[in-house]
Length: 111
Image (tube, rainbow, N blue to C red; front, top):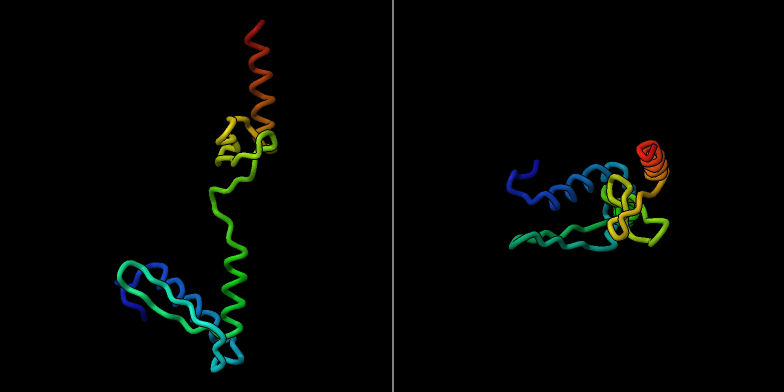
């Protein structure tokens, strides 16, 4: 069990490696080390081929929760409301639906 004073990234790596360790057929054949430094503390982890491959897969699958795609107009980043942070255009299916609704509402107000 890890100490409550272990930094979250270090604890996450420990838990990740412990979770895949039972399935590693070659636990005695390390292929690389990863050193994590959080503040003044550092910790070096020894990874087998399986652990290194799993880490690469996890890192490649990560998607930032704030990444909602790119604007079709200017290529800027969309916020969680599918509005472009650069040009302000609403984008995506949701954004297009809202834009059409707003355009329809504007025409009704003109009457």
